[in-house]
Amino acid sequence: MKDFPSCFAENGVQVADASSCTSLSLAATSTVSKAKASQNLVTCIYQCKLLGKSRLIIITWSKNIVGHCFSIQIEDLSHKCLSRVDVKPSLFSKRKGSKNLQVDFVTVDVYWDLTNAKFGSTPEPIQGFYLGLAFKGQMVLLIGDLRKEILKKTGSQSCSNSLITKREHIFGKKVYATKAQFKDNGEIHDLRIECDANDPRLVVRLDSKIVMQVKHLLWKFRGNYTISIDGVPVEVYWDVHNWLFGSTTGSAVFMFQTCSGAGKSHEFPWPCSQSLKESRLHCPGFCFTLYAWKNE
Image (cartoon, rainbow, N blue to C red; front, side, top):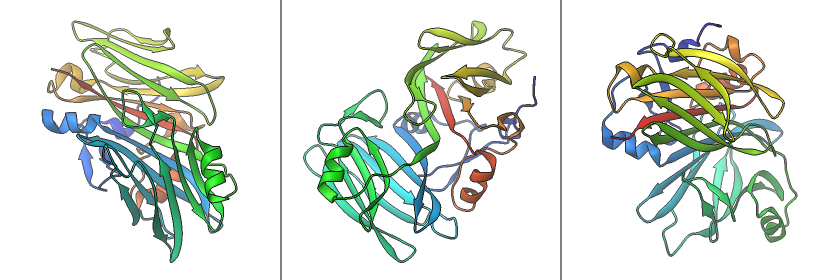
């Protein structure tokens, strides 16, 4: 077994929250209210081109009592996430609209339509929506399945963008389920993690098929293993220390990484502020991180 990345060392994980750029210690005990608040948060990081430069764009999807919300951050030339816009649609307004965002003294137009958006178990829409960023008639970022509508509306040309990092919080008792896409325009898979503290064994299923199984989990509560998804090798890292030995409100961490050098990574590839630039060096592929919280 390869050495587990130092980012998962006990009491050594610091993850920057893209919605506030503040640090969160994953190894520290969290309160139940904070854990449940995290459940309504999905953060995606895309690599795009703007003004001839490669930029990271952070989109954070969240949910409150009146509706679904999202925020957008674009790194500037100094690789800091200073340019930001927040959109907080209610049940009756702002489900469709546009805003402007200033980045390096230029204006980027933001368009969105969540009017008929459909959602799964997370705040991130899965269909019936579009979200686009445009600069001088050229799309910088375009996501959603209603692409023709926004291109016709704005008269912009399409673009290619790459999702490089995604972070998601999931809840469960013995089973933790979500959907995952491991490459651009790839198949969307049902991802299921099973773990019973009374029978310490970890099972990872992809579309109901077992792709990884860890026995003797009390001894192997941290580790990594390589699986294949859509013909692509994916390194799976896990840390279930909090589940087995910590607080009942502590989360386990699972990271699925398609980077070519995944086994040699020694820093958690989560960009914010000065770490934005470092993320390019440590994760040239796609990294999907799940924080699995136990329900009471």
